[in-house]
Image 1: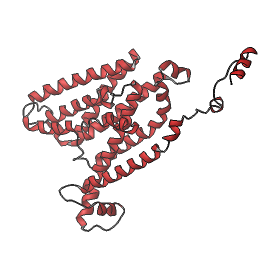
Image 2: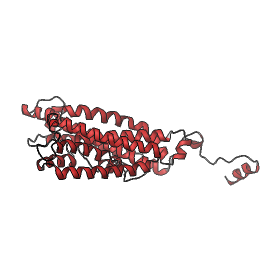
Image 3: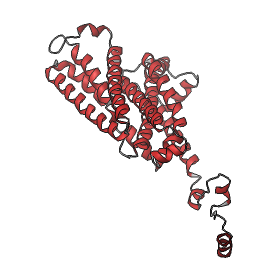
Image 4: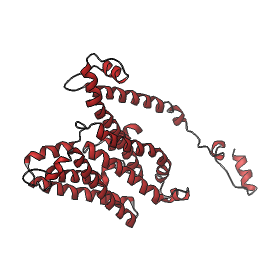
Length: 314
């Protein structure tokens, strides 16, 4: 091998020390990669099993307990042991379980995108301040429809849960718009991250002010929203949450390659033909939409977007 290299050097020919796979455009696989290739399908299969079991357990648990095998039978069109069980499964618990799966998947995908975009393992979908903006919008409706205290929005009581969700979406969209305006002017994703945190603290302070002047009876509803819950989700809410989360999550794999190239630096990604600003802009929009919609209908669900990507990588 040394003689060959010396011969090339003496002849003035350029050296090409790449392997045959690399020369033909294929990335060579290391021994470690070959030994751990089995992990991906195995881990994926185990996760599918865990999701299915958790899904069935979630539907079966409640004031009326339904065995897992009966839940599976009902979902597959079988006859329930009691007629009321079928009503409970399809009308009460199935939309909640589907919403939980959709929201969890959306936040996990959003977390992976944020951690890749910012090259920060502690980033999650809520660092843009979108969640705080959604909470502020919901707080205005929840605390502002009381008969006393801060009850200047009494007419919104008739709108019900969709009024809260609509206000949360509006708050999330307003926060997103401000963050994107800063992003276009500054052009740095790190600056957008800092601005998002600032917006989050500002929205939190405004919620505290509303809480101070609100009717105490309304604080319970805000606390429940802030903790995150799918208890009140129905098929009507699922018809909004499901398609949005599905479409945005389905588009995520198309952003995987550009985001992976961004891990090596913006300059390198540009030389590979990636429109860096466009990728950053689209990623921020998709993550903000996922965080805003899930927060609007499910409340503040913490740590899913932060922890899920690390669990998958591990």
